[in-house]
Amino acid sequence: MVWGMFPCHTLGPLIPVEQRLNAIPCRFYAPKNSGCSEGKGVPDPVRTNAKMSVELDVFVGNTTIMDEEVYQFWLDGYTVNDAVKVRMEGGVLEECEASAEVLRSDTMDQYRTFQMCERLLHSPAKLANQLLFQIPPHRQAMLIERYYTFDGLFVREVLGKKLSKGTKKDLDDVSAKTGVTLKSCRRQFDNFKRVFKVVEELKGPLVENIRQHFLLSDKLARDYAAIVFFANNRFETGKKKLHYLTFQDFAFCAGQLISNWTVGALDNMVEDMDVDLEKEFLQDLKELKILITDKDLLDQHKSLVCTALRGKTKAFNEMEANFKNLSRGLVNIAAKLTNTKDVRDFFIDLVEKFIEPCRSDKWTAGDMRLYLTHYTNSAHILDTFKHQVVWDRYMGVIKSCILKMYHD
Image 1 (cartoon, rainbow, N blue to C red):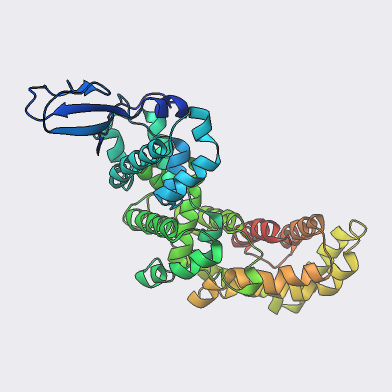
Image 2: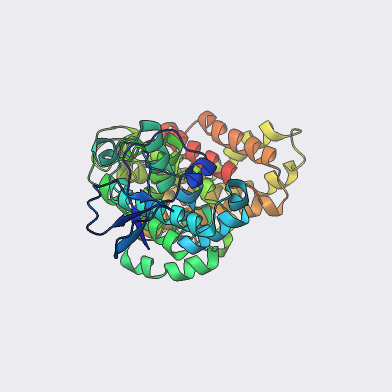
């Protein structure tokens, strides 16, 4: 018995599984030398008296069947057998009165279709222009979005690492740690690397370049922009002190850095604008050290902040006692960002020098917001401080990142 698997190239509305399974298989017999023309086989159980015959089970359809559940199994790295098992456990056989053999054949056919589409998904624009599969735009969008969607646990393990062969060799360990199948890990890693290579050659806004070239939603394009940004700057995210932070915490911070500290924050057509931090701005940050090296300025800054905070928070005593250490921590982070290693340690420094001390003093999220607001604004009142523009550009990002990162 031979299965004939014929891909069809018209994708209409999603066909209910019971209709799909009840439509297959169509078994017929085409006796050798019987003179039957193509498609004119004699339906079972009618038989001819010919000495030789070929029994065919033919999968017939007029649409390309793409079941979203099976597509997800394929993306998740399930084998055909595993996917069939899950579908059977879901009761599809009883629902459709189909056999296990039919279900397996249906699953295999869809897996083949997805594999044929995969090369087009590597360059999503080609999916709209190819002629092999006639796929409506809304279905194309689903295929693309799901193909490039990634697992939060997986991306958290590789975030900030170089997208190289060496990192890819370690995916076995990542798979074992996260529970994501190795096949899925490799697909996601290859997607990260593919997007990185494409956008590093493009001018203009990073998020927009990703969205237009890979046809992703705005949210997913922004997440990929964060991955590209972290891979380029090699931010450290794997230290134990940072384990409590999620990918979305880092993605938010990446968005803040991209929007405010890169060259593209000033000129949106500069090459690599959203990938590299602006060197001139990083140099200007050194000027902020006057806030902690000038004793009069430091004392004046403390006085202004404490006056604004007094009576507004239960943590006031701790804020007053630790003001100078906290201020030194934030200003020193700024002053060292011209050094590549210190850029990589940016998030570690925020946690060690500011977040952990505040957490140990049991500041609430409201306390943190109140403190950072007055700490930032009070610098504008300092008589001899002349770097307000750089200060606001720096503290705007620092405040947003700390508030996002300040949780259990």
